[in-house]
Image (cartoon, rainbow, N blue to C red; front, side, top):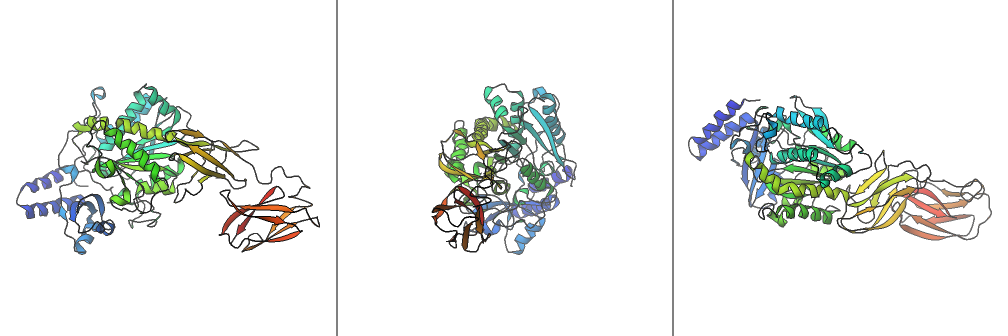
Length: 557
C-alpha cells in the first residue's frame, strides 16, 4: 500500500502543464493506486453492454460513461482501442479532517470517522445499549480490518422478519456509511414509539462499511485515497454469482468480503434489504443482469417511489432522475454479479440499491443534510418489511414448525418464492396489494393452497397446518391393506395404472390429479379393478392423485 504522502505528491502534479500533462500525471497517480477512474464516450447506449464486461461502470451521463478499472482491466480497454479520459479520483478531490472518536458527546455527524473510531463506535453501542443492540464481528480481512454489524431486536428474534441495511461495498462511496452510523445511534438512543416498534417487530442488521479495505486504502486515519475496489483490486459489486451470467461473471474467485456476505445471507434469511451507494441519487431496483422484469416489479415500483417521494418533501431536485427517482437496473445500465441480484435470486430477499449522493465522498459537513433527506424514507422502507403476507407453517399433528415452500401461482419465478424458516416456521412475503393463490408445500406433507387478498400497506397473517402424508389412514381402509390404492409405475413415462388390492371391483370412483400448486390438471373415473390413465401430456415433475378419498404422490419422467 502506498503512503498518503505519495498520493499527495502525485496529486499535486495535476496542477502542472496542459491537458496532455494532466492525463500523464493522472496515469502515474492511478498506476500507484492500482485503480483507474475515467470517462468514455459512446455512440450508442448498447455499447454499455459490452463495456460493462471490461470495466466497472459507475454511471451513465448521456453519451458518456463514468467508469473504474483495475490495472489489468485498463490495459485490456486500451488494447481494444478505447481511449479513456482519466479523471481525478473522487476521494482525492478534497481532503477532510477526520474524527478520531474523542469527545463523542460533541460529535455532530459532520466528519468521517477514522477506522479505529468507527470500530469503537460499533462496539460501544452494543456495550452501552445491550438491551437493544448486539455487536457482531462477522470476519477479519487480511489487513486486520473487520466486517462489523450492529443487530437490533427486543431479545426475541425468532419468528420475525429479518432486515438488512449495508453500505459502502464500494469503498469510496461514503454517504451511506454515515447514514448507517447515525441510524444505529437512533435505534440505540431513541424512545420514539415508532423506533421501539421497529425493534420489537423486526430483527435488524446494519453494517455501515462492507469494504473497509477500500474505504481506508490510504490508511486507517483518513478516507483520502479511498478506492472503489477491495485490497485485491476486485469490484465487490461484480463478484457475486449471477443467475443469468454464471457463477463468476467477473472471472475472479469469490473475495473474502463476498464469501462473508453470502454466509450471512444463508444463515439469516433476510426478508428485505438495501445497499447504499454513491455517485447518483436514485433507487435502482432488480434486475441488474436481466432485461425481463422481476416478478414483483409492481411492488418494487411502489416501495421505491415511496422512498424517493418522501425525500422530495425536503428537496424536489434530490432523487428526481429517470422515473422521478427510481430506475430498473438493467434499463440504467446492465451489470453482472451484483449483490442486489444475488440477494433477490438466491437468498429469498428483496434488496434494492440506493444511490444517495452524486458525490462519492461529499464534504462531511453535508452529512446532516443527507440525513434529513433520507431519514423518513429509511424508516418507511424498514416498515415495508412488516406488510404483505406473513404467518407460520406447522405440522398439524405435532405442532412442530416446518420449513416449507411458499409459492404464489402464476406469479413466482426466478427466485421470488420464499420459504418458512426454522426454528419458528415463520414466513414473510412482501407483495403488491392484490389477490393471490398461495401454495404451502413441504416434503412428506400434503400441500395446501389458499386464495389470499392483501392491500398495499396492509399485513395479512395466514398460519398454515400441513397434514403428514398417510396420517389417519386405517390399516384396512381404501389406501392401505385390503383395498389399498396402488399407483404404478412410479415414476411413469406417460401411462399410469391404478389398482385396488383385495377387491374384485369398486363402485365408480372419481380421481383427480393435481400439481404442487394444488391446481387440478386431470379428472376422470375408475370403474374396474385396474384402470390406466394417460398422463403423457403432463410435464416432468411430481403430482398427486386423489382417489377414494386418499392421496398418493407420483412422478412423471
